[in-house]
Length: 530
Image 1: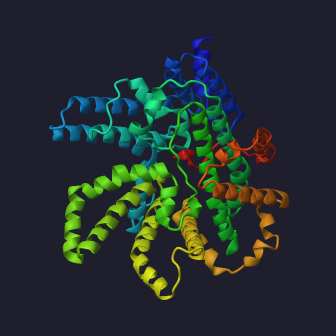
Image 2: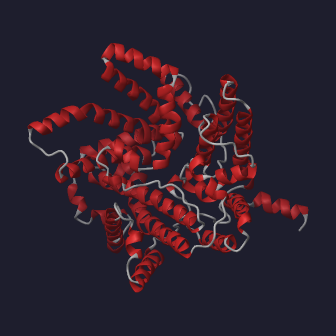
């Protein structure tokens, strides 16, 4: 092939041309070939093969030049940890300088790619508020590499652990690259800890039939969540949220509840595919969900939802903040002013504010994310903490059993409602649109639309709606039945014909009931953009 042809092929190639999304036929072919070769080649070459496959996936799933960003991040982290390994612990100032510079390089790349326009829009908004011109600063468009937030946080956690002596410097840059760029992780996480998960990437893995089949079973369940449930829910959600001015009352509440389940089945479905895929390769990634809708408080909800993000934020943002000189002095000042117990609580709330602001910003460069996934949940948790003692006293006076099933059910519903309000901000077109939808939701009382057939005008016919509801019922049953013993383990104890019948039924449910409407594409998961 001539140089001109190669150049033309590269320049005319666009992201997504190879259709390498995780739900695509091409990805399944890619994974099948990978799985066969992975267990065929000598074990000592497996990690290198995974690195090549990860690089190939990055190239096929987006513009080729974008792969430079993660490799710059890996190189910066490798250089930083190499310098930290050579610098004695006693030279604290020098080590801190190395750490700060490494963090700044990685956060700088992340900020430039994802948050420059957020900053520009915020400044423009403030200028307009005080009578200045609109669009004072022009926006900047960057192509963002796949999973930039996920691999950045995983790599930064590794650097911070090396700084504190919790992890050793990885001398092999390519091994560090595999840890940072492992392709299933780039789609929607989970966020890894080097000291807990990295070694299995480099260890040899012999073929294990049970492990491979269990991984494939979990992948099938993830496809069911995504294609059968999430995409159907998305039709209703997109109809209402796409024209929210035309809907009010229970239309908005129904769409918001649907979005809560859409987001869960989409994100957790992706995790099932990613974790199942990795399990089939002998690599066990951390769980990211633990039946979050059974949570009885918002704080508990976040211990069950996007678990690895919460753990990362606590370990590398919240606890370091509490130990910092600024918050140590703040804690001391609050104790003197409000008393020991209240003072410590208020200082913790202040640190939590920074934590939740960071969580909100991580989700995206828009105030709707800062509110919907950040500050609103900070407010919920603070109010839960402050109201817990008087509520407990009131229930004691009323002789209500605080741990009873009725109270637990009420608390679950309350938590789900609060989370839905946050999801409304997260899904709305803007903060202004979110407030307009909330006003529309409470200004009209029309519960009859839930049973008079009005919901059938939102994009799904009666059959599609029935499939969606029955699938949600199955999801609820599996979630409830798997809280103590994983459902896969329960199925594994069944006779062989029963086991095969269950898994084949799931497979054909995905094939036959997966939502493939006109113009439909399951190419992107909601969290893939983060």
